[in-house]
Image 1: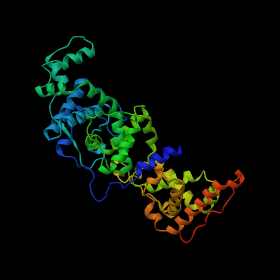
Image 2 (image 1 turned 90 degrees about the vertical axis):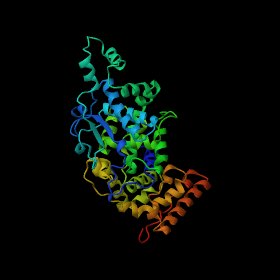
Image 3 (image 1 turned 120 degrees about the vertical axis):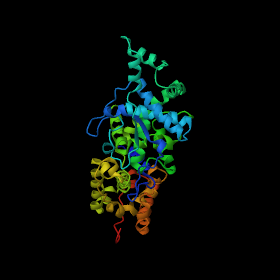
Image 4 (image 1 turned 30 degrees about the vertical axis):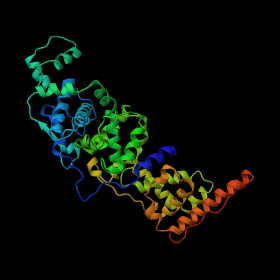
Length: 401
């Protein structure tokens, strides 16, 4: 992986994750923000064992699901604009196969999906009252949407609120907004908190997609809209959309993002990769071979099964594994010394993960920083390439590093 991509992932990890194993982190949305679905939809939903697949829902089916969510949101005090966005996004994500059938499939401790027990869909109601001839499907859909026989007044009123521009924005951004929410939970351990805004903005900007000024806040888009689907669905949907090339290229880079709870390994590995281009790397890696090998081994293990190492592994349907970051803690003073001199002002310099452990041995951090500064000054003053590339001994470990 290119270093600039690696550093981008490290910057996404910057800051504390919000997960606490001592309290439930699910079920924090208000009752009116729960996902509303008609009972006829449940049999069509996939189980956890099934592959992701589009649901064969008509336009009217999708709008019925959207209207149900809009009514609940507005009824609970959510603004009309936010309710329109969330309702259409949720209906689109359901159509794309993002909703799993049961609480067990969704791997959630508290279910946030409410089923409406109406016996028939609007499609079935309309077809029963209006036998159709062999008309084209698109004409059939338009006829139903314009029919006074379809649904109730609330449904007709809802349809009239949906502008072509809004529908276009939703369809263009739905998969990438889903991926955004999935990525934020992956790297920060929570759907949203105010301090995540910089990461959210940076991640969305990388997609080069525009949201209109009328779009809801990030809290609404990445938390309220997606929360009822479950964290496992976020991961599955992200991977499915990526496989279908339905995401911006920037999310392809983030598919290997380190999980919340493994930031030490992710950051340590990224710094070591940058160190490898230095003339003193061979000597450094020999002095600290055991620690360097341990970091690289742990990095590889986490990449094989990242969600098992996530702080909220259970919400992904995984059995949690512990992260062994003792090697990075030991190297932290040296890594921080390198960052201070060689990577000042870069994305990796803004991470805080190493600070606590680097500060436990400030002498080693300072010695290594002084050594690197000496090398930089010698290169600046060198009169020839051979003089600039001349060797200097790497400071050995003091007891203990």
